[in-house]
Amino acid sequence: MSNDWYYVHQLAVLAGFRLIVLANRLGCEDEFLLELHDKLIEGLACAIARVQSITVLERQLAIDTDEEGLAALQLHGEEKCLARFRITLLDHLEIDVDTREYHVNGGDWHYALAADCDGIEISYPSLSALTDDELGTLAPIIRAIRSEAGIGISIARVIYG
Image (cartoon, rainbow, N blue to C red; front, side, top):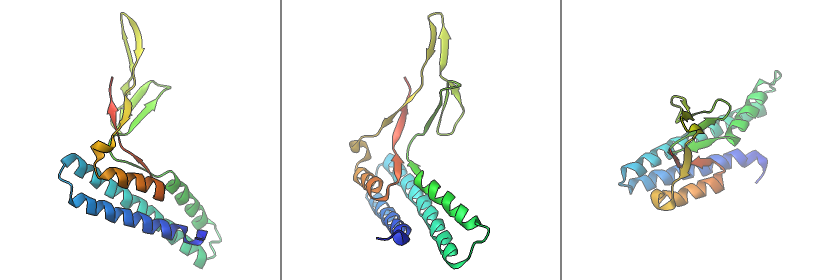
């Protein structure tokens, strides 16, 4: 496949996976798994929208001269964003080691520093990936999306302790 068709192929792959997740959701009865399906469907829709914007920009560059280079610059930015695109299905943990703070799912920042008569302790939460048993029929679909579409998918919960 030539590079000219890469994003068309990527669009077809992502749309196909979105349909698979939608179909798989029909047989799901667990509320937690339904929520994961919904988040994955939403994430795939966002990835599809990004790929569609790339194809529109490529088409624009093929038709127009783009003398200012704005479309080429925008295309480059969209391609970089797609390369870093990640779907987070459960928890997102961000740690700022410099300030010794962390926040979960974009919430408030919390100090990881605690002091008492025994001294100072720094305790950050960690992420624990869900097992295939916890993901059920969604597990092989997520592995396939990661390998075939190259989209990063995070399925982990925050563990305090």
